[in-house]
Image 1 (cartoon, rainbow, N blue to C red):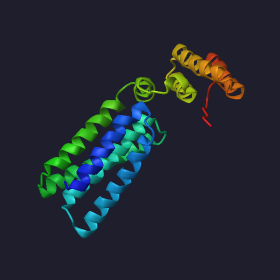
Image 2: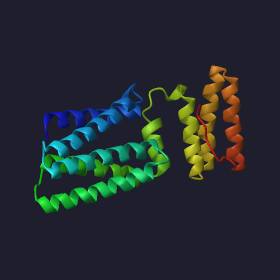
Image 3: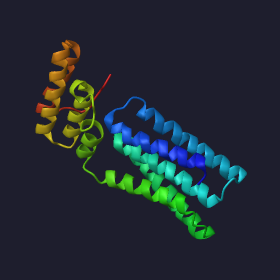
Length: 204
């Protein structure tokens, strides 16, 4: 690894660490740096700054980190990214075996990224959302959107009583803000939870 890579991965790690606390700009740190690293590895592969093995492992690591972000954010296309991440890891292993160049820092980075991805992937979806968006959110007492999304996540997992509790938190925040328009929308969501007819969620 070169200093540029160490720096990017360090900042990305900080971005992931800050995201559960909803620190401003945390999300905007991760994606641009992942894109920058991809460009770096592609150019490195074209102009042969580094070995194909190092570049392939680097690309796999970036894709795995993006898959981790999709997993934590519950993006609907996360399954497709996970598939690409697995394929990229297989390709990296093939290059590793074929060229027999064991670039230890790159391998360690990939293993750590993969461990984090699958640790969160096999965690209960609602627990993952709570840990990533609710538990450490410094603004949670005023963030009705997060509570409403949490109620939707709980509802999708058929945890209806917990979904109603989360919805109640969203309603309480809006009542304190005296925002009747949004309050009516959240009340409607509550009715859908009770009647088990909540099919889509909108957060605008």
